[in-house]
Image: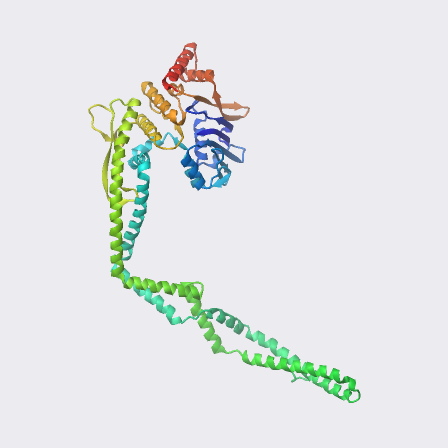
Length: 560
């Protein structure tokens, strides 16, 4: 159940914090006091769209927090699967609305909006004023039936969805890839063309890297040769001032000096070693320069080969290995196309196998749906009679679609007659706005018996009703609140009188600021607010007495 609501800086709300009780929680207030803003804040916390313009003027953010207490083991297990840690059954959902982004958290863990919606849908169901209009769309009727039969139909619906996806994929493949013979021939021609283009290149693993290194070397060879020629000029023997020539001169002078002093022999040997090193260096340098001579024809061939390889890379893969991988895919594709008839037959057999399974599952689902439709309609008739549809007839009319869908092949429509002697007709053809509200309430009351959602919120479910019908609606809401927490916004005294917890929403002006406030009412204050709803502007003693009587009557009606 919803324990606590905290709203800050949202539209006219400065800050509101309220604790909700068990059973029936009623919210009342003057038109324009901010009841819709309060409901909007709850919707925002549960993942629905909200504009940044809803941030209170002068503030940088808005915040909505909902604190729930969860006891159902199935829901706690689901939360654990979603990596949401729960302690003592408490779940805090928060949404912070900023100018450029929203931050959604569940028990302190940041979650995406879709995940927030998934989590919130397990504990709370909000019925807004426009939701009953969805009953005018017949596709909603089957969804309601499936929700009613969820325990028995969920697994089979999942199997049908999986089978349908396989069925649709194979059918799409047959229609797209195997129906146009000319297209298949063109595709084979293109595959062969690409294979030939790769084959004719005769690629070798790693050759691109070798060629690129060679190409860079050839591009720079002229500059390299200029520098090397300068080096050889300095170290060689062709010039009298070169290092080689000068070392030779030094050796001759050292030999002459050695004739007079034997101790110079070691120095002479060192000089000879230097001469040997320079000789070796010049020989290696000369060899390198000979091999590096620039060849225009070779440069052209390397450049053309690289252009060929890079052209293939731009089409088939970033590396030679990826091009080889693509070629392997082309081989497989060629084999599939060449084995066209065999593959087509294999797919047709597979399609028939899946269709047989799909058909059997759809038949089973139809049987389950019709069985539960009978029970749903029986419960709906009882619920509608409780809501002052005294002579109502209600049933579901089934038809079979000419094709499969991920939800089976059923189409189902709610049929209703609210007047004696008139045949049932589709709901969208006969129900008025006020009737739709009551029909939706009946649906919610029936579904409440089979789902695990603990908290139901109704936004002016009393739209378009009054008198005895309003009393019946209030009694039905009280019945629902025996097993579920119900929070309802209302303008009707009959519904307000049923409150187990009553809250007043008001708009107050403080200085230059207007704000919405929400106050929990005790028994006496609840009677006064009920009298205001009954009497309008002037609350007389007689109206107060009537309000007290309504509260007493409601208390006796509830019996809990």
